[in-house]
Amino acid sequence: MATNARKKAAKILLAMGLSFAGANVHAQENRKVLNSPTPTYPETARRFRLSGVVKVQVLVAPDGQIKDVKVVGGHPLLVSAVQDALKNWKYAPASGETTVSLEFSFHP
Image (cartoon, rainbow, N blue to C red; front, side, top):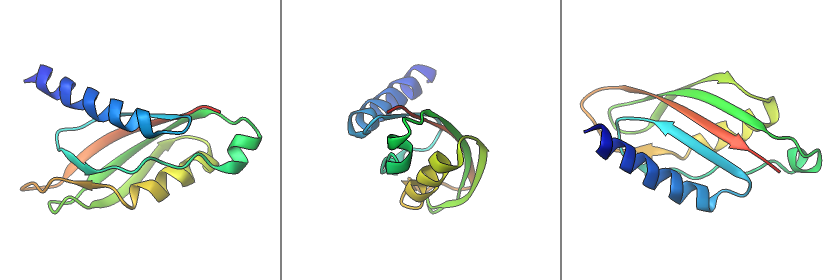
């Protein structure tokens, strides 16, 4: 069971990593992600060659929408980009709420 979860996470990370412009994401989750647009690397951060990691915990409602985002850490410029992207994330429906830890890495 853990192997299947790792394979799913690896596929998701690979797909998302290919679409990131200088950013990577790592997720620990039990629910399937249906839509996960990547955060846009902020132009201001790019000009200053700002890199860093943004860690968040999201509360996913039973309908798959993100209900709440708790920022665990990260530079405010990068946090803003992650929060904007998460507004469009969608998970598979489930019988209850789920907490998911996500980590986004930004590199110029």
